[in-house]
Image (cartoon, rainbow, N blue to C red; front, side, top):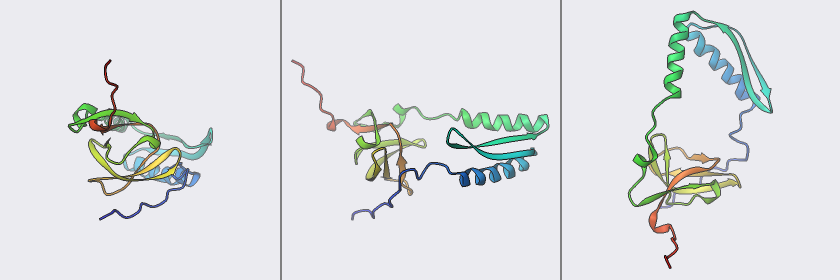
Length: 158
């Protein structure tokens, strides 16, 4: 049974807007207040055409240490090496969105998912439907995928 068609995602859909920045500022204020951080100012703005936030506030040293430890653990979250994720009989290959194929395996979120369907959203991205993952994933730049070895053509030695 064929899978249902994926929704069309217009170009620029994943680009943050000023409304996204304002919503993120509200979430940031609430989250930091919950940690004991007292914010004096959170201002959404734009730098170089991209939405950003300027934050100014105060916190005690104990809160700063806990917050720093939490952020450091997120920044250095151990990821599985690609070789551990590689399915048998495949070879790693870096591809652009236009070069990805149905049947390739995409390492993502500590797992490796087979691409079962895809849609083009333009020349620079693809919407990928992955086996074992409910939500489609949007590929917007070059990624390493694992392609079955029988799909490679190697030159014969002369």
